[in-house]
Image (cartoon, rainbow, N blue to C red; front, side, top):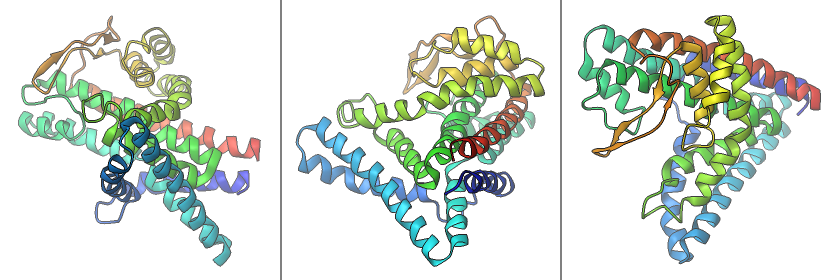
Amino acid sequence: MTGISAAWIIAAALALDLLMGDPSRLPHPVRLMGAAAARLEKPFRAFLPNQFTAGLAFAAVLVSGTYVITLAGVLLARLAHPAAGTVLEILLVYTCICPRCLYDEAGKVHQAIAAGRLDQARVLIAMLVSRDTANMDESAISRAAIETVAENFVDGVLSPLFFAAILGAPGAMAFKMISTLDSMVGYRTEKYEQFGKVAARLDDAANWIPARLCVPIISLAAALVCKTGRRAFKTSVSEGGNHKSPNAGRPEAAFAGALGVRLIGPGIYHGRLVEKPWIGADFSLPGPGHILPACRLMIAATLIAAALMMVFPMIIG
């Protein structure tokens, strides 16, 4: 794949996402990835009694298998016709990114709050976050929505575009498998502490460069959309490390600085209060009026990221 064709694949995939979003009626590769992981977890645990080794083999087989199967599919499509290979790559990269979905889901939360349907907003935000939402007020719901948009800008937009730029659709699909495994087994619980450790560390490693690359991207978007680019950059640099994740704090701090709001902080998880440091500690708590600006900021950052990832293959190709 040449640099020019890679650039067009990224552009076309993003255009498809912004126009169509994620139609629920269409088959989605991530659902197949989840089904494969769920089906293979038990056999790997049974075959390899050491749970860390089992988890290592489990992640290695699924991630490498995803890459190889995708690569084989693309090559076979190209053998049939070069255009078929390009179309397949566009469709696959399209399934790996989700800016439209992020915008729509956060927008639904905003609409519910604006209409005074706080119970509905709690139900909607519960589908996006892992914390308890039953007693959330407007500010807590708004904070959770903004954090979802910010963190998933890396996981669901920048990282898959980054791997698509470097390794084409097979790279983007392999990244999505890593992300899927982390969401399924990457937990520090008794069941997954050892088995899911490799999946969690793989996810950290895969997102490490994009999570840092997002800082100037979001800051530039903030300068264009909110006129707060310098504050976004400063907040991300100074407070992006105030998070248990080595990556999630960077985009969240950039959004906090861009919007002038306080994010993260204490939350209720499984009925227990978990104390977390604030990001954007000098700012005020967010409200419903900050949700749509966060969405617009994410879309602007997506367009900048896509432009950057389109240029990159042409430089190295």
